[in-house]
Length: 357
Image (cartoon, rainbow, N blue to C red; front, side, top):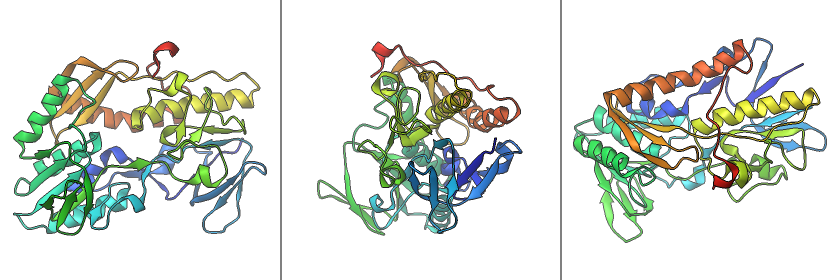
């Protein structure tokens, strides 16, 4: 069996650590791709421009020879579309963005104001990391709704309390319409000073599936069935942020590392089943908690039900910070564990089908 991994670079980027790189707390969030793969797997550096499902070929953007496949795993992840990041704002979609932002932060005057637009978990972690690293700067977190609104009441209180303690100004229920190098303009017409604006909102899927004529949802994610196979082309499987599974098994899933890992493992199991002419199994993947870093040493762990609805219990402070750090380390450990023994990774089961949202 020949396995080829197509990736834009020869490195695996831990996006869950990019905020650490941006703040200057980590030199790199990348590890060699080869360190995660079986020795027999081949790595090809390149960008897929189109998939031809009829001829079973993947065409590359540099016009080099297309790659042939018998079975394809579509796992291109999510990204920030450059067109959705306003001029004057810094994105955080990859290592290049993180390094560019880090260079800008190191050049700011002590009285400068930083605006973080988007108060999802990424925005919260970015704001906390920068505010702790650069206490002389004024950090502002702007949210279209309430900050940490998907957490429990106690979880949200812990988040806002920590952000307030490190000097983060929180602006809720405010949408940013546009920005430039020195300000952000809200939809209400207010102009706020901003010497550096960081855009963490609007993650979406790449256009590859749509451009290849495959069925996609409004976000451009590849439509797959309950076994993560493409209905029209059963030799194409999907996993991670770039796929949309049926409501019966995937209605509760969100774009995250905690989703990508089990979907990738389940897709691999069903690819093996297909090659061995066995029936595939439907996906069952759920959650247990959300881990959020709030600086280098503190954090919050929000316990959740299998369908990601928050429970009442939260863990906060240094112990939560240690749990978050451990979880980040385990991400690579789980992948390397699969290299040593296929099927070693396990994950929480999803909610019962009638409970899936």
